[in-house]
Image (tube, rainbow, N blue to C red; front, side, top):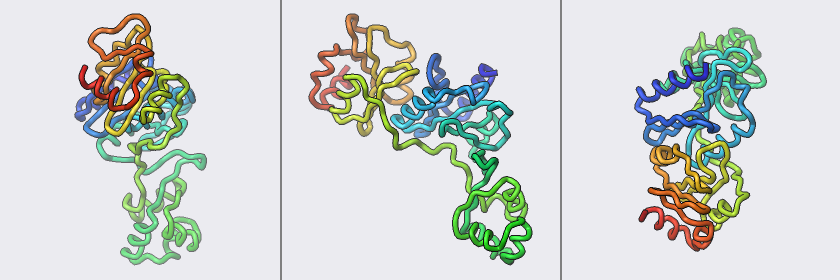
Length: 287
């Protein structure tokens, strides 16, 4: 099932104008980009199988590259419903049909929360539509099955309502009074991990940087528009080149004994001797 989902999602994205990179042995399976929109996608047979470690890595990488992490799956124990957004470790989780609708700009109105299936009302729009149609608070409260005070609360603030109430409101006003679930929101604030001397050096040079696991590189560092993917060791990952090209990133290898060919590389000593970020950036650009 996973292979089938992976192929369908990749082909669909290609048809929609995305450049797609599939990865193996990584915390995400697809990196897709269309202009400024970057998606980091994990495809799973069962969404519940994702580990906290994988989810945390997806969050970190997404924050560094200004991407949207998401999970595509057909079930999470039970089958995922169409046009409903679920979450796993704060990552939007949806089935393939819902994902395709979102790419086609048909964002869902319903999400799964601890309260069950809910929808978010746009208070101002609800009041505007009610008054436009000439409905009283009392009429609407009886139609929905809540008090007039509750309807007034709905209109004065954006509220979450259960799916049963949402369906009644939808039948009266349509989708205009609901807030769409933006699955493409980007992660901006994230606590990064800097345990190695190399990631700590990046921080000293003024980069935002984090050590990375379950991905083809060991460190990701960013300063303004400069993005650097760094590998540590003598064996480079063959997925690195196409990955960096897709992200408009520079590659760097900090090698131990064997210097790789056709890629910027320095020894541990050389890397730690950089005193300013522009020295490192210049070295990468001149390669």
